Image 1: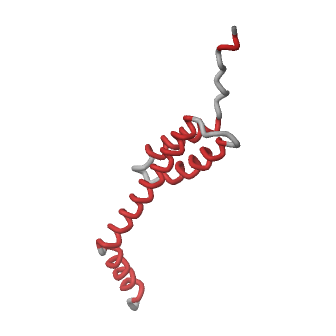
Image 2 (image 1 turned 120 degrees about the vertical axis):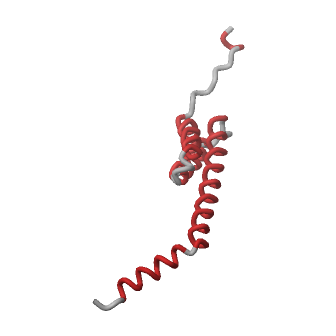
Image 3 (image 1 turned 90 degrees about the vertical axis):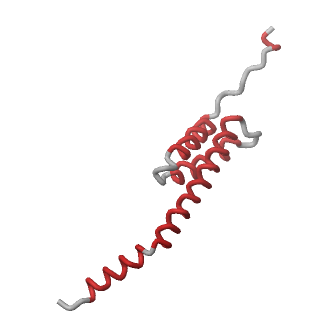
Length: 104
């Protein structure tokens, strides 16, 4: 009678950790720390696979981590381009060069 019930495979800790890191990468996107959660999430999702097919939490962790990584990189590029295009960087460099190059 027990043969008709299939037992679930044991939960994979790496897949669960990947899922948690994928969620954290999206939550910490506003702080600029999504890369530090997304990169290990991708690695753990791929490591959890082993020689078998990727299970549900690993797939979800991989997808969320990739989304967090892409959004984190896009936000960093957007932020750096805004800083560069605003001209404040050049103005601060000119101000600091006049302060340090003026005779005492």
